Length: 198
Image (cartoon, rainbow, N blue to C red; front, side, top):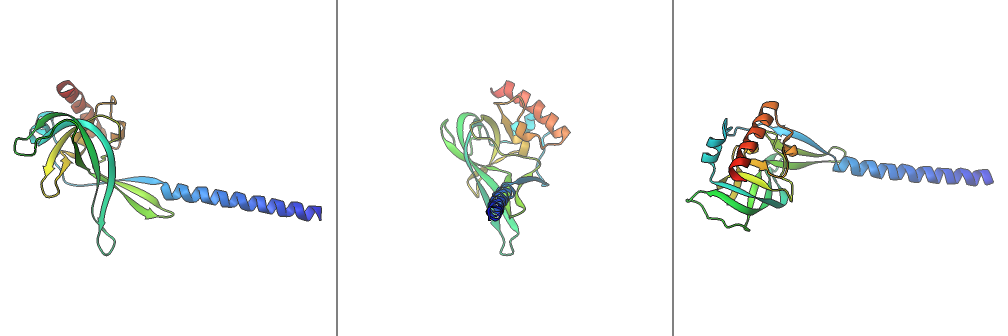
């Protein structure tokens, strides 16, 4: 009888351990995020000057919060997707006279060319990104080169990864998904822009 009671305790303990392990595995797989780069046509600037000239706005500030935006067709295919980031302005370095004039302290909506798609269990989530772009980190200070999208009253990165520079880090570690050439160019542009706009 004592052996039977001991056997039941072992079975109960093993069952609880299996349930706990399964729950941990489920949450890990459900929250796991893989990264995929999406190829797209966008302007690439070989030197900093054309990027500056092509931008409606050159601004510094910090991202406050962001929201994933995803619109799908009836069949479930992704039609439009991006991240909308609320960006609080610190300084306005340049603004096109033909577009709205900003003041420091205002918050604008910036479209970041990346989004998360939920593949559901057990596949987790996938972050899709144009040209290796990654989200701005909340609380970090950035220099942005933006174009105004009049249709949606939003602001988009000019040159995708070339339109965003983190002033907080020597190199924006979030940009490590770039090719070697693009990463080297990003570092060179960043050094130039820190001298110009810091």
